[in-house]
Length: 92
Image (tube, helix red, strand yellow):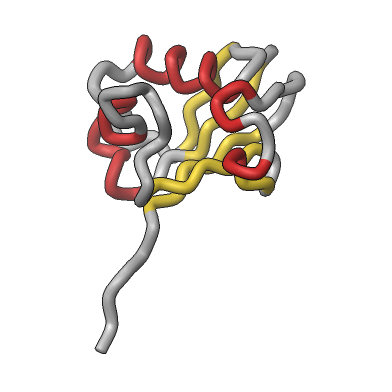
């Protein structure tokens, strides 16, 4: 199934500047693996050494946080969208 992965600005240097990358995958985990296959090094920015999504990265499948679904096992359908959102912190 073809899904679109929205790439945040800080990671676009790893995708040659692309803001959206289309991959074939049935789950969010498969989508991240496919993304890594196309753009080596990007998955280490999203996932930790255990393969889990880093705490400061939010991943959404069709605008739903995967942490409240099946995490990396969240099922995808043709035409679905994944958004990778780095957490924002700071302020005074």
